[in-house]
Length: 135
Image (cartoon, rainbow, N blue to C red; front, side, top):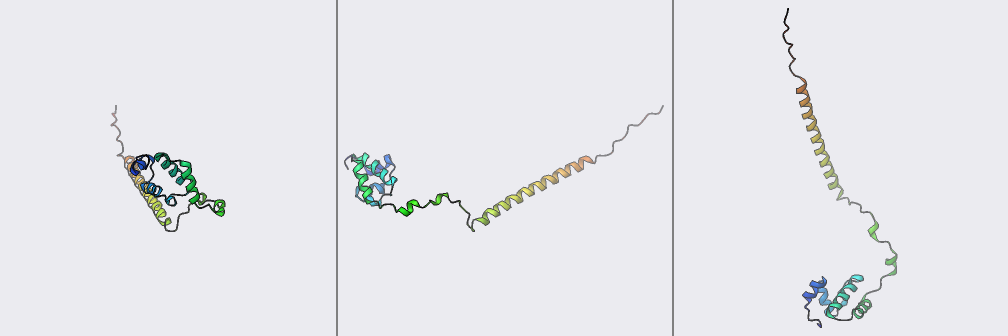
């Protein structure tokens, strides 16, 4: 290596996995990710070791297979709404039912306490009239 840095040092500075750095060292660029990520890894590595990043990026582009035209025109699946599978629905419904049962139980208990409090406070002993004094 021209820069005198170890692969671990380069990995620490560039955050590129050591296995990918080893692939670049061994001139096995086909092991790198395709697209912009792979090109960025090559450019960062080239800058760290003092090699022309453009030459390595061109070599990577020659090794990368061209993108098929049909795949480029096909809409991505990222815009499709996610629908819960049949296996996920029972868990969601059982959690909802359990929560609703707890809410109903709390309402019943609070209503019972309120009813007891108003019933006992409303039935107080009849007030006695003060004894009237006769003239």
